[in-house]
Amino acid sequence: MSNLASVVKALRNERGEAQRRVKQLDEALKALGVVGEFGKAPERIGRAQTTDATRKPMSAAARKKIADAQRARWAKWNAARKTK
Image (cartoon, rainbow, N blue to C red; front, top):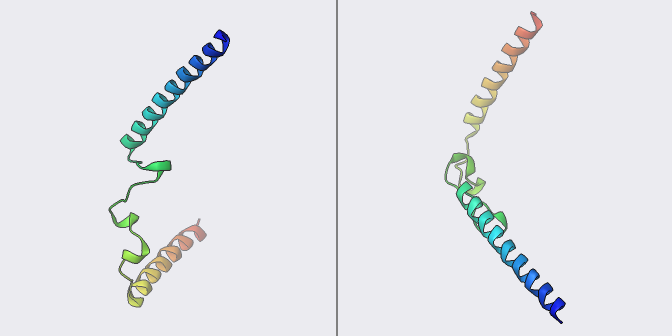
């Protein structure tokens, strides 16, 4: 019977140590900005973290302007590459 009691005591000690370790890990995650259950990231504020629903739609003219600028950059890069 004393053997069983010592096993139960050892298991309780291990459980206590595991709980302390989990608490330390939770505090570390909180310090890094990850809070909540199962490591869910908090709501972030900023352009890169907004959802599609909250972004303003880009006009066709703006998309064309960006595409034209990117094509010009690629053309410049390809021309420089061909001259080497």
